[in-house]
Image (cartoon, rainbow, N blue to C red; front, side, top):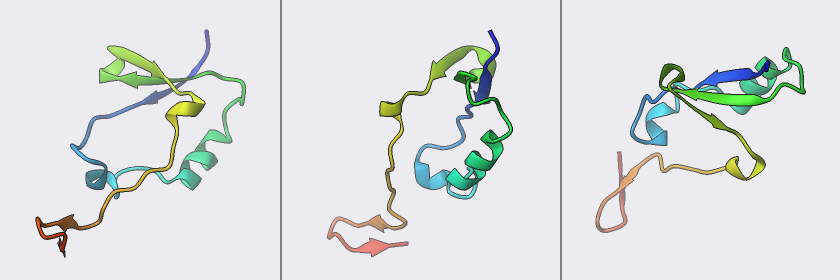
Length: 77
């Protein structure tokens, strides 16, 4: 079976650690334009030791705080 493999890399403990190391939605869309739209997409983890799939309910917009809040609810950088 032919498929599009995306090698997922564990590089951080939180999303805020990746903000300068990951692609944007626009970059990903431009990259995917070159592939057959009917190819299944499979995530490869741990250099192909385990694999995963992508589904509609697994994709969502989320956020992370740019600052850390202290115990009084005040931000600090």
